[in-house]
Amino acid sequence: MKKAAVFFLLLMAAAPLRAQTPTPPSTVGETFSDPAMEARARAMQRQLRCLVCQGESIDESHSPLAADLRRLVREQMAAGKSDSQIEDFLVARYGDFILMKPPLQPDTWLLWLAPFLVLGAGGVVAWITVKKAAAKEA
Image (cartoon, rainbow, N blue to C red; front, top):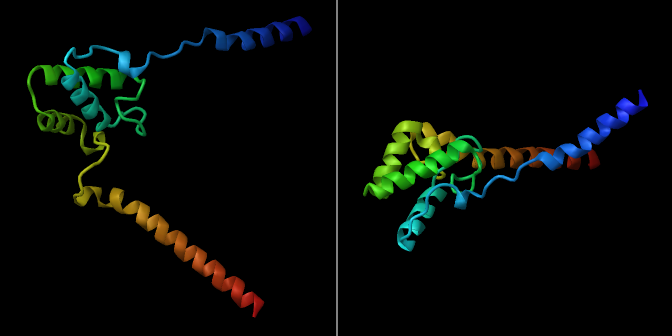
């Protein structure tokens, strides 16, 4: 029994050695030989949200979907499409959520107002707590 436990512990300790380091997003896929096109592609990729990671742009994400989206953006740029055409295509396909800065419209009001609502609610809770503490002292 002790040998099995030791073997299991050694096996678990060796597991991280098998882990693979993901390839950095900047080296995944194609790159443009023209520095201006490469800078444009990277700027565009920083404006698009990874639908898997959600807190990262597709430029910094390691997910396979982000790699596919980076490749799609570069293909459309190579085809001569403008940034707004590419953005419109991706919004039509994935919705406004793909944008790191979604537009202010009726269906995104809650998204834009949520930080202020949470801050206001926290202020109300703090004010009530201070008032209750002052009432107990009096």
